[in-house]
Image (cartoon, helix red, strand yellow):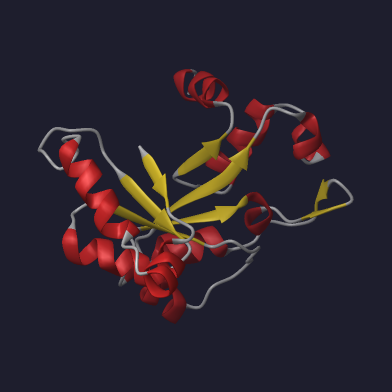
Length: 170
């Protein structure tokens, strides 16, 4: 289960509202803090939000990089590890495109994984207009290219049935 908090820092700083505490309380009331419950991932683009969750919970923390990046320094990856155990990047960060064709494969996944960070890629869709021509307008080929070719840990998709179909045939 993924929870994404984009505006938590703004609400805490400008409005005095603690979204972090509200989320922790709601998850506790729902029983997600109990052993054996479903795994919960908290995702944010803001490291301070993730640090607040790290202080108060044991949930998996995911840092979302909301721009295309093709490389990362070892120092940057180690810095991310201080507040998250996983990273979400966009598809273009792994396989940049130009005019609908993949131009290269970056080394961002290798750099992040070398620092023991899990790497998730977003957002996979079934519509052929969202895929590079190199993937033959086939969502399963696209997912396979990222999992087998780029060695990512997981996908974030608008079509979970497609991801399930892929994972059930591996």
